[in-house]
Every structure is written in structure tokens, then in C-alpha cells.
Image 1 (tube, rainbow, N blue to C red):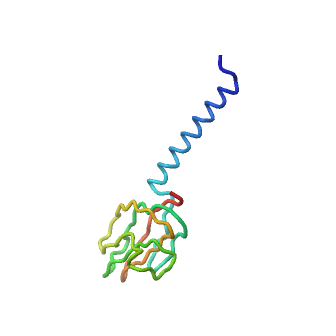
Image 2 (cartoon, one colour):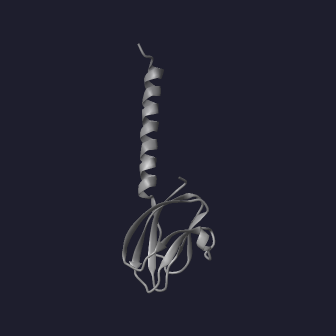
Image 3 (cartoon, one colour):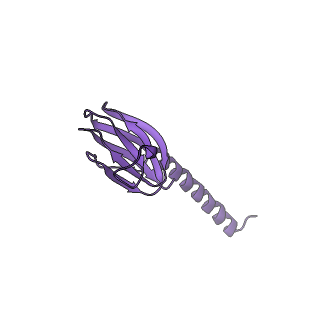
Length: 117
């Protein structure tokens, strides 16, 4: 027969497993959404996952989202281009330095992301 310690340990392990699954699900769906960005902005510094971005105002030129901590990132740091069409765009990209959003002329953009992948 199992001791009380064994029963409690099994229950604790079950709770830990459920918590880990919940955290993984949240990382995939995004846990944070930025404010609407209209100028080059460092949204987050550190590691994470860009889940999607939303073009709120189309503007007349496309923008970009970058894996950088500088609001003047290089093209090599670009995670994705942001089109001039209003909508929500799934991405699913990992970033390791930070998340910088650079809207195109007249664009308004926000991003949904998770930290520490």
C-alpha cells in the first residue's frame, strides 16, 4: 500500500505537469500585446517569441519587426516585413535580443508576443 508521502508526491507531479503544459500553450498563443506603435519602438528587450502582428492603420509604406534592441536595426535583424494591408498576421518567430517594431510611413502596428521561450 502506498504511503501518504507517495500519494502527495504523485499529486504534486501531476500539478507540475499541468502547469508546464499550460505555460507552453500560453507561449504559443502569446501572453503580451504591445500598445499601438506609430514610430520605431523597442517593445521588449530579451528573449521571446513573436506570435503575430496587427496592422491597425495601413499607411503608405511597409514596416518591419526586428530581433534587436536598437530602434535603428539592420536588415539582417529583420524577423518579418509588415505589409500595408490592415489585418492580423501570424508569425511564430523566435527573437533572442529584443523586439523592435518599425512602422512604415503612416502605419500603426501592434504585436503579440511571449517572453522567454
